[in-house]
Image (cartoon, rainbow, N blue to C red):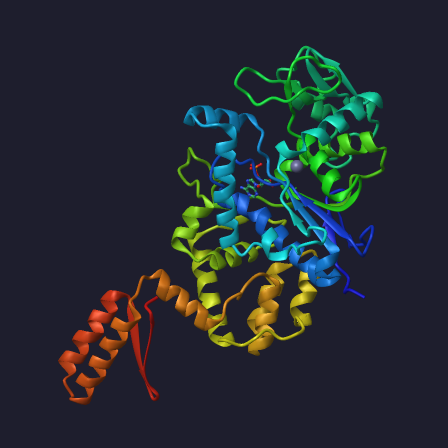
Length: 459
Ligand code: AMP
Ligand code: ZN
């Protein structure tokens, strides 16, 4: 019997025990990035946080019993505009951006399909792309029209919001507030200001597919429909957990719920809705105009991915997070200390309860990290940290990695260490200091201990 997991559910505004629909197959979905440009460090937050949840669910229910779908949005106005600007095809733009995104998140210690999927078995981690699910989108749109929840107008298909009596149940916004928000520039073909686009005609040069509902002109999907289609295809009509950033609650998630529930006639789309808080940089909203816009790659140029991951997990996922240089420096020091304790130890078989407990309390990472700080047993520390996607390397491999990354020539270093030893034996202190300075200039620190001289990559 798995220890109890409690999650805060945006749908009920309460923390409650998590009870999967089918304990032998836990299913979760997270809304991923729109791949038109390098992902920023804010985008890394849901990716890291929900990767941690995936790891925790795998730990609690068994790796073969959890499916995680995290989608990629590869059809969008920003993508069309960027591809046109660069004079490349949309597919070339989205393929290139996705590849860079994968390299980014792999470096952040995020599990990738190739890490967890097993040949011949049901995939455990899928990364569906919107443009590979047009047929499912069309099927849902046609189902909605048949059920009287959508209508065709001026080449568009629109969701008929007033046809759903309990629309708004996730965001719990008063209807008049939503209407006021929507009323800015209401398209004349909408019956209600709240109605939203399921399908629209494509302009020349935009990607297009044969339209549903007998529309003659080719078109493309609206934004929200893709997640209803991808979650249905990979997880079913109703599933356990749906996650994303807090900005997505309205309208994106509200509209996903409307589409899926009205098409399938279900009471809920997902049982539990999780939303991560927003990331800001050094106390300010991150934006290109403020000049504090940081991509994941920018961070990885200066810091190991593991440091960035730890810096992200220091704050509880629902709180806003302030991304600071100080936070990164502290995370780096913490990892240094932990690697020092763990050395090359193998992880203990069991994850320490002191670490698991706070994680099962709505992913209380701050408390779990505090517990890791208290551990001085190498195997226990390694097991607890590994569950959080940290301390994945051995101390030796890490040292080798930094030697390689620093481009150091080990044979040359050892020759210099030997020359320094000889100088010291001859009490030629000036020569010994010269060699040490030469090593330092190469980025190598030497330390003389009772068992002789050791060296490491200078911090
Ligand atoms: P986007 O590409 O903007 O659709 O965002 C992809 C994911 O990143 C979504 O789950 C967003 O909610 C999330 N996200 C975007 N910006 C931030 C931010 N500054 N802090 C935290 N999450 C964010
Ligand atoms: Zn979505």
